[in-house]
Every structure is written in structure tokens, then in C-alpha cells.
Length: 476
Image (tube, rainbow, N blue to C red):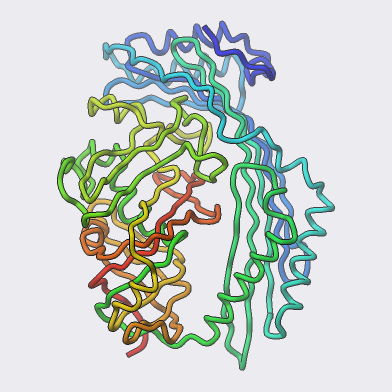
């Protein structure tokens, strides 16, 4: 029986009878383990104000569907930007080739949910075009007036409203309307011919109103300016092995990249992760508890249901240092004999789902940041990260610090530039000696890439002290 949908379904709006779509899907899934039709209609816009003018304003509208047939380890996937009976029929015929004589047992569908983690806001509708441009002009003027050393300001707004529907093999039609908004500010300062930059941003699953009040956007300007001015006084970072204190919030991106990807089900099922086959083992220092939670209201990485129709949930991955679980889509869960965790995600209808993180973080401990710094003879305090690179097979990472300071004799002293953290996730987890009591999520700016697909995510952690990390730098 179909789940009631109050608004016209994408199928109805496209002139496709749901009964016909069900029949075509059912024929394609006969003898398969799993599959679905994923339908999508989305609208997005982006504004960039740079160098004192509106540099770009873009609008995009897309729609289409993808049909998947899962047969054991194999999945057939076909997609089209045309939603019609003929297109669905062609996709069904193509995706069904994945079976090639395979005979499986249809998996039980995902459970139902009445939970809604966000409203059906439309960031494109409000405020209007002219008001958005005027806001960016105001942000630019305010930032330039804050300090005579401000040489460049870039401010941007990005919003989207994505409507997805998932037609399951049992005839259920699951619908989710997903708003997403983000504000970003970048400030460049100059002194004596030297230029440095700072950035700040915020967003989540709602309309723009939550982030464009004067109090909120001024916070972003002040933070970006503060970072830029700190970097203007920074000296070259010395290299060597050091104890490192990480600030809370966005620095959880290191945990996300160096550890989180290695805990996704597909890598572990295939034995390519540094954490493969290690359930029940001590993989981190005692006190380290890592989770992924897609069911947090309004968070950037949250989803009411994932892209297979499974309700998202909180999944504990590492508990008190012991590896206790992985993140799964339906295929990896079935092949490993486990339950799907609501982590099946895709960039759009043009891609099949795979296990992906949502909002990933580490729970609080009992230390405070001042204690961590006071206990460090020589080290680095990393307040903010930039980009990084990670090898999933061994967890080796290189991360750039965008705001960092030397710690000398238990005190934060000189700001440094060019600092990079080098190590591997599994080893770094065992070197966590102090866990802060100041957990925070990032402000809503994360995007995660995997397999050529990008999806919005959240990261979070308390302050951490990690001993014996390799710090790359250009100083002595």
C-alpha cells in the first residue's frame, strides 16, 4: 500500500501512473535482492559578491529518476532526466541486466517513520532576489568598514530545495522535502604588502532566515576578519613531532576523513579499510566514543530518510575505544548480515546510493581545553582546519591548519602559518590522551566527497589532546 502524500507526487506531476511504475519496477526486481526507483526534483541558486560587485548569480532546476536492481554483490543502475513510462521502462530493462540469471530473495523494505527533522522551507522563495543582493552588499560594506587593512571581501549565499521520492518494490512511495541554505564570508587583509585570509560560514536544513539576521551575519564577518588578522601576524610553523591540541567543532573534519570513511560499510565488506574485521577490538584510547547521527533536527548532514527510504538514526561506531559498528546502506548491511543504519546516500538521481556519513562526531570527555594546554610543554594548538587528504586503506592523512598557535611551557603563544598535521587515523585515535568537555558541531558548512559524489555533512568533536603527531611546517 502506498504511503499517503499530500502534495502531488513527482510521478503524478510527470503524468506517470504509479501503478505502471510499480509494475515496471516489479518486473525488473523479480529474482533480485533489492532495488527502487529514486525520483528527484530540485531547484538551487547561488550568489557570489566579490570585489565590490555581484560577481555571479545562478539558478538551476533539475529533475529525473534512477532505477536500481541489486543482485548479490552486483547492482544495475540506469537514470534519465525524462520522467515518463517509456523512460522508466528502458531503465528497468537496462538495470535488470545485473541479474544475469541470478535468483535472490527480496529484502524486507525499510521501516516507516513519522519523524520530520526539518520543514518544507524554500530558501529560493525568501528573501527575494533583490533582497539577497542587497544583503551581500551590506555584508561587503560592513566588513570593509571594520578595519582599514581589509583589502578584499567575498560573500556568498547558496540555497536549494530538493524533493525526492523513493518507490520501493513493495509499492510504498516515500517522500522527503529537503531544504538547505548556507552563508559564507571570506575576508582578505593586507599589511606591508603581505596578504592573509580568513573565512567563516553557517547553514543548515531550513530557509535563510535563521542565518541572515544582522546578529548572525555580523558574527560571520567578525570571525572571518579575526582569523585573517591572526594569520597576518603568524610566523612560519616549525616542523617535527609534537603534542597537538585541537579545538572543538569544525576540527571534527579530521575525525570524519581519517576515521569516518574507514568505518563505512562498503570498505569493510570489501576488506579495504584499516578497520576491516576489527569489530570488538580496541582501536582507540579509552574514553573515545565516535558516532554518526543523521537524525538531528535541522543539521546540515541530517535526513529524515536516506536515499533508499531508510529512516536515519544514531549509530555508535566506537565506544570507549572499542570498535562496535559500521555505517551501512541496505546492500552492505544485507551482505554483512547486519541492519541498515540509514546511511545510504547519493548526490542526485544520476548516482546509485552508497554508505556515506551524515553528522559524525566524538562525544565529550571530562577535561577542559585550558588543562590540555597547561599540560603541554611544547606543541601546537590547532583552532581551525582547512583541507586535507586521506588514504582510506590505511587511514594516513595530511591536514592543513588554517589557524594555529605554538604552545610553549603550557601557554598558547605565537600564531603560525603553514602548519600541517601528518599521521594516520587508527594510530591517532590511540594517542588521544585528553578529551574536552566542550563538544560542538561545525556551523553547517561541510561537504563530503566519495566515489565522485558530493553530499552535505556535519562534523563535531570536543577539544582533544593527541600526543606525538608529526607537524609539517616551513620554519625551524
